[in-house]
Every structure is written in C-alpha cells, then in structure tokens.
Amino acid sequence: MRIVGFVILGLVIAVLVWAATGINAIPTKEENAGAAWAQVLNQYQRRAELVPNLVAVVKGAAEFEKSTLESVVEARSRVGSMQVPADILTNPEAMRSFDANQGALTSALSRLLVVVEQYPNLKATEGFQTLQAQLEGTENRIAVARRDFIEAVRSYNTELKTFPGVLWKNLLYQDRALMQQLEVEPAKMEVPMVDFGAGNSVEQ
Image (cartoon, rainbow, N blue to C red; front, side, top):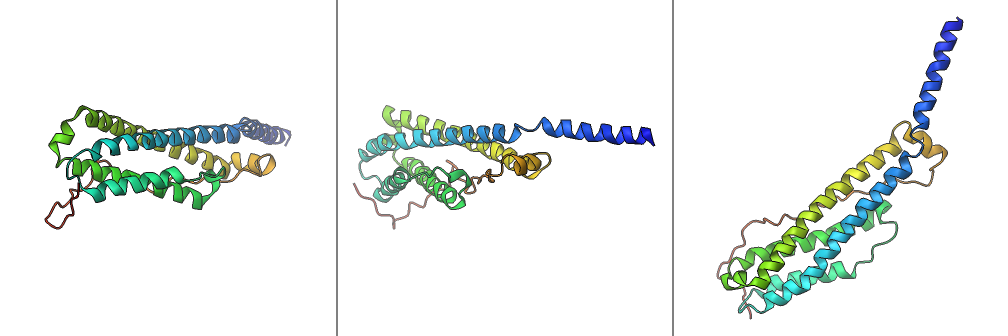
C-alpha cells in the first residue's frame, strides 16, 4: 500500500512540476503574437507609403485607365484613414474591418499591375520598374508577416485552451482573451486577366 501511495505522490509531484514549467507560457506567447502583429502593421505601412509614388508615375501615362487608378487611390485612402484600436487583437469586428480594407488595396494594386501590361512604354520606365519591384517585394514580406502572425496567434490561443495553460489562465491570467485571426485572404498579385473589350472607358 505504501508503495502505491509513493507512486501516486510521485505522479502528482511530476504533474505539478510539469504544469509549473508553463507558468510563463501565456505571457511569452502573447508577446510573440504582439511582435508578429507589429510586423504585419509595419509591412502594410511600407506598402501604403509606396502607393502615392506608384500612382504619380502611372498618372503620367497617356490614356491610362482612369477607373483602375481611382480604385487604387480610394483603397489607399481607406487604409490611410483606418483607426487601429488598441484591442484589435481581441476585437473580431475591428480585425475583420482591418483585413477587409487591406485586402481591397491588395486587389486594386493587383488589377493595376495587370492593366499596366497594356502600356509597354510605362512598363519600360525605370521609375515604374523600381516601384513595381519594391511593391512585389513588400507583398512577399506581407505574406510572410501574415503567416508568422497566424502561427503566433494559433500557438497563443491553443495555450489558453489546453492544459496546463488553461490552469494558469484561470489562476493568474484571467484577463487574457483569445486573439482574432486574419480571416480575409488578400488577393494574390497574380489575378485573372482583365477584359480590355471595347466597352472599357479609357481616359487620360
């Protein structure tokens, strides 16, 4: 009987020691998710700063499709006027709004690059080539930043819902809430071909 008691006691101590090793897991994973989110914001900001220069270069092209340019300017304006609340990581509505606006700008820029294919003189200019390379590089960094953020949030949320994290949440971190994921998949830079039929309005 005594041996069984020692075994049970040993198991209890082992479980408690194992659980204690995770006491800092929640704040650590929270910090990781916060850092990943900051990188997402940083890359989106970098893209937003490229747009005005891109628009200025494209405006110089004769007979460039006005509606395409306007959609980029409008999407950039919405992104620029967004107020990112401090609680966005735990606010589903704010996260959806943020991601939808960024996705709209991604889509508008994708269409712009497709339309530019119809303007070889514009494509050949050094200024446009430089901006296009910077934009495509930024889109790649955005994709990486989003992926890292999604993984960091997944790890944090899992910690809150599984043992021993759920134990420490109830004991020490009751104010911690599940974080929101980026749900809207932004449009890829490679979009379906645009119909350049006679019905398109082209203005200078």
